[in-house]
Length: 69
Image 1: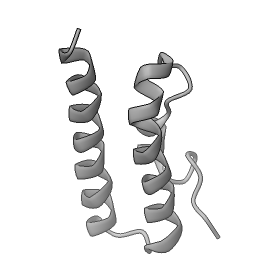
Image 2 (image 1 turned 135 degrees about the vertical axis):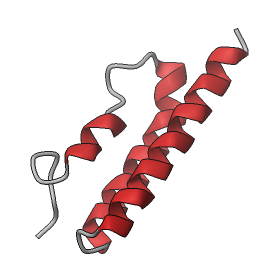
Image 3 (image 1 turned 90 degrees about the vertical axis):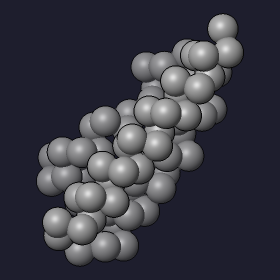
């Protein structure tokens, strides 16, 4: 069974459809990887850390695009 946002609350932070197109392009690969991590790895503290660090990287990448403006 693949966890959903209901079963893995951190996935909600990887949503990107609400973002402008230029930020969706940067954010969407992180969301895809988060989904793969949840699908492939068993729920554990280490999976949570992996998602947290991926979220941090996504946030940095999005801010890098905003920095250009």
